[in-house]
Amino acid sequence: MEHWGYARVSTTAERQAAGFEDQQAKLTAQGVTVMFTEEASAGGTRPVFDSMIEKAIAHAEDTGHPVAIHVTKMDRGFRDLEQALRTIKRTPKYNVFWVLHDIAPTPINPKDPAQALLVSVLGAIGQFEKDRFAERRTVGIAKAKKEGKYKGRAPTAQAKAPQVIALHARGFKPAEIATQAGMGVASVYRILADHKAAQASQGA
Image 1 (cartoon, rainbow, N blue to C red):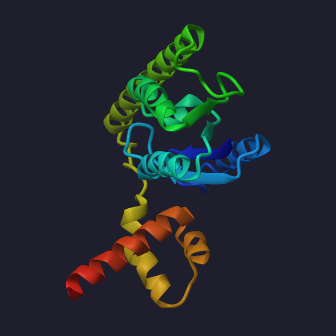
Image 2: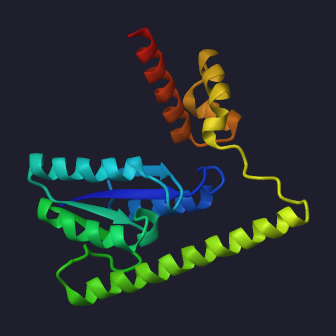
Image 3: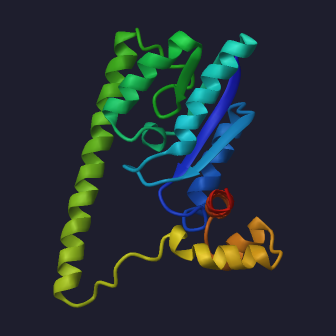
């Protein structure tokens, strides 16, 4: 069985560097040899995660080697309980299994009633906490607005696209651009890829 890993942070890797590095260190210690990383909000889309699943399925089929995907915590990988249950039940038939280290150090068996119950309970608790956080954040923003203290969200990575493109044109490498722009390397690569695709479409 091959061991792959997935690590995610909600904002940039720089802002959550400790958590990001901790996830990767724990996964590597568990024997993970292929690592996927992503910067994505808890409830947003996760293209790297989705692509990883399809690659794992294709790899298992092509090589005949089952793939175990390791995640440090269930909420690092899945958007919500519904997606977690659906995915954990779907992929084993393609020889792709899930190791959720907040539940067990071995692959989850979706046919095991005890493990299925544990996934459901932890997922429900995680969803409850996420909803509570969103509620508290909404109340906090409303209070800050009323007091004239709300400054809005910090610029997203896409808002820094012109700076990224300009630095790249001057010959800076992605890692150097990430440092200067105060963002994750993955975001730099994404902006550059989008820019390249836009140029190609314009030239077509």
